Image (cartoon, rainbow, N blue to C red; front, side, top):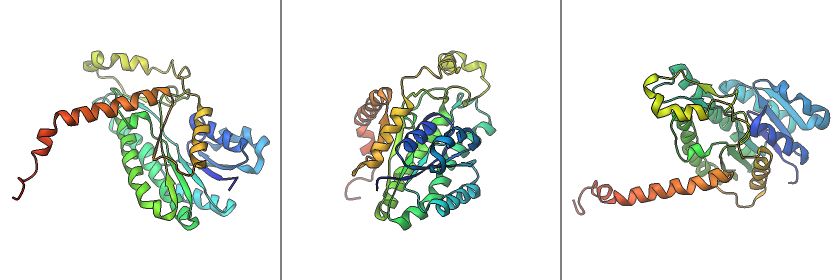
Length: 280
């Protein structure tokens, strides 16, 4: 199939917007959702009916299912789901409010879950499809001042790895996308920040300063090149379960994996001593 139908959530900016543009440029059809789909209207004049822009708050499960039904009714299928909707939450674990914590989980984790649940019946019926949950190198390792963000990405990774095994028999593939720092608004206006607790000024001061939004558009990652990489993965006959994006992610992830291997080896005696004795 030379032309695909993509459903991309969180498509108004950043990686989502770049992917929408690259898919349209390649002649694909894109169902692009955002809280304000009007932000995509500037593409209508160039791509016409190839772009289907829909308002969607991914935390609304019923609305997510409705948008997917409407899209399938209109174009007949969905070949790729990119569960991209999400945002960053800056703040120490003790600093974030209940509302901030719940909102982060609702968007980053449940939003992806509802999107997957809405699309999978169509993909199973087709006997084909590819799901791309947008995680982060923050789904591989964790850093101070973003604990709740990491919680959602680690949750997304575990959920997605299970799903990949559950749907493989239906011809549906899944690749978890793990970007490093990209030149998007993640660290800018889209980030929510908790009120600081003075007791953590020394521990979190440097991280707070690094995440103050002023460097949001100086990151090394190019969203359009990331979009090209995702398109290449979808076109692959043997796509990976995980795809790191950007030099920072490609450098950091192996170091984190090695640290875990080394630590497990160092404490292997205690790990193996926790079973009943052989023959007991």
